[in-house]
Length: 580
Image 1 (tube, rainbow, N blue to C red):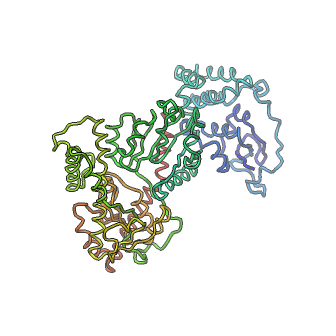
Image 2: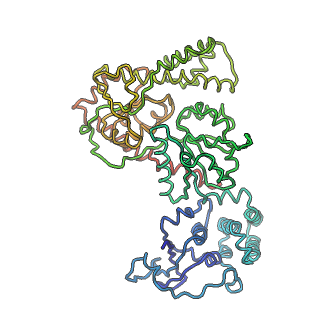
Image 3: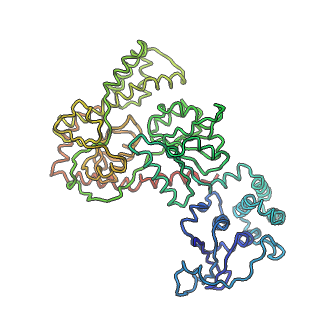
């Protein structure tokens, strides 16, 4: 049976008695000792409420007592029950010679509720605030048992003798009235609602969702998972009026859904902060971000994208710099680089930039000339963020536009962005192949590259995100070409490091801040691609195997320390649990 065990000095050591909600509510001393409970309890009621500055165990046990049996066991002076010859987990099966519990709400039988007078000596405002919150949370139950007026009167009497009398009484009133101040505390033990949707990225996004869900559950959070690919977006209406600690999706369109009136955002009717984790340039989600709910926050890995959102999407509540996390492979393999079958692997799809150029050539004359200038600037200076390159193209064309027009133009010119990105991706691969370096690629799309028959290009079947880790484990070097994230860091880089592979990637500001080139990672500039072959031939030679292994080991260590999804989950919980 799922049962919570509380160790206490309120009963003789080795004895036990069951506790109900009212036992604990009217005497917080039951929560003074340690307690044990199964993970299923936390999954049902949540963890300790970090929004409370005192008496967290007491508040937690009250929540739990409404759903699970609680057994108090007398502890000795060390805080543990006397030896019984039985494991602690079986103590709940012993017969309990406990005194009859007072009738719930019978204050005449139990005397003044000790839970609400224990802070008189210490004058603890935080303990008082917790008691006020509990009265507000359970006021209906207190009213039904005719306890409410007595408890409130006791709290008012305590507050009147304290130097913080006015603040204390005002807080009590806020808790009883269920003002936003009450919900700022209460919502912290509500579930985290995670959105899962149809994944078009080799199941990558769902892998992220699975990682977050596991991390939150491991941190004793309540989690609800909504799978729009199974239930359909219409099923979201069941959440209207509900409260959540937070809602989170990855590149999610669900936050922009409107009600039938066409103007009301569905998520404005669901209580709690909304977080959309954005991997790509936010402009590509223009329609969704322009119709986001009022309290929508974005989690973004690239600071350039944060600045873009702050300027061009004023309806977004806030942005948080949030690098993606990496995850460890399920099956560890020999980390030695020399034992790996792949010299260089590249897990990415191929798209022909020439097809994008054909689309650009179909633009009207005015936009075609602007696109040509924009493309030329990006190609010549690949270190520029794309939006900055377009601003330069507009300036060179003596054109001025307002922010709304710029956002629309940038979106309409997205084929230029993708054409240049794909051009550099192909150029990197072709440069390595022509230098006699074997590159292993994965997926059907690589049959479309013009050099598909190159003797150094080895094409393999496509792999899902979870299976890609095995490829990285088997690769001495994992190639990455950024999707024009000039101040970002992708999960592919971190996953490769965690798999013990040396990462070879074009540089970004974030990567240069986080890792040391040639020590933790191999970075290159897109303006110096021609230098890569000599560098790689040297590193892949037998005499440099120790150096390559050291880079792999250093990168893996840094990724383990700072960039697992567990760390990202902790970042979010620290944000949500922060006391106002």
